Amino acid sequence: MEQVVAENIQVKNQPSFWNKLKAQLPFAVGIPAIIWQVVFFYVPLLTIGIYSFLEVNEAGKIVGFTINNFFSMAKWSYFNTIFQSIGLALMTSILCMVIGFPLSYFIAFRGGKYKTVFLFLLLVPFWTNFLLHIYAWFFVLEKEGFLNTLLLNLHIIQQPIHFLNSYFAVVLMMVYYYLPFMALPIYSALERFDHSLLEASLDLGASKWQTYKKILIPLVLSSIRGGVFLVYIPAFGEFVIPELMGGDKKYYVGSVVSQFILGENTAQLGTAFTVLSIIILLLTVGVIHQLFHFTQRQLTRGIQ
Image (cartoon, rainbow, N blue to C red):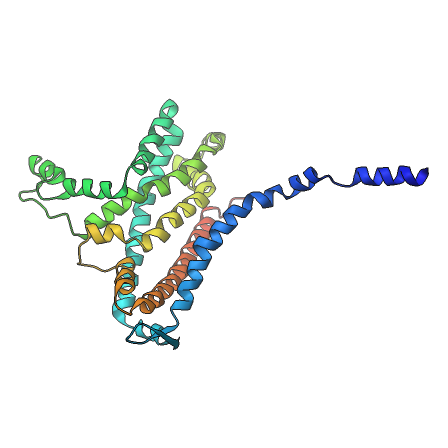
């Protein structure tokens, strides 16, 4: 009898099927995301890495493996292209940060009941086709467009300025497109920020600048860093905007890769250039991360 009771207690104490399922649910929910990440990120990245070492003959057939593809990239013109892309990505990130932080601050602290409206205006460009935005800017920036007409009517300029096919047009369009990627993470951090910390700092005699420098900025700096990476990494490889707004005056990473991939028997060179670009990109990301870490230490120095 005691043995039967003990067996019944043991059976009851064993986790049921549903309890086991609940325990595994967090992992099960993440499986689709893991599969997506592997199939659409790691597999293509591995394919690019393998293809960069392939040797292809004039007929387009693979004849073996080689590292000569990387030696072919050891030219100043290719490194100059990468450096130009880094410069464009940095310029875009800095301008988005300079514009995005005050914008996010205004929406979070001064938006009031109109916060939803401001966020809607910030996100509404994503609801339409990206190419439509670019062609709309053509009408704004062309010689007889809105911007030149406005400047002429205000007597700021005497002759129309050729804005299109210029570095200015590329940067303007890049900032226009990537600004929400910077503003939204900063807004999210500011929205969760405890305003009483600012009031306490001011009550204790700190100036507004000291309060922002020692209290506000250090607490949202991680979100600023996240916004910088959300802008910098895709901006580094941007293809459409420089191609349509910049003309052929400068070449960037996306343009060079597309020329190699679409060329005859040069795809392996394109993948080698891609691998080289990714390595340099990761190095610059590490440098930026260290700069933010250094800035964090400097801003919080003396605060216990």
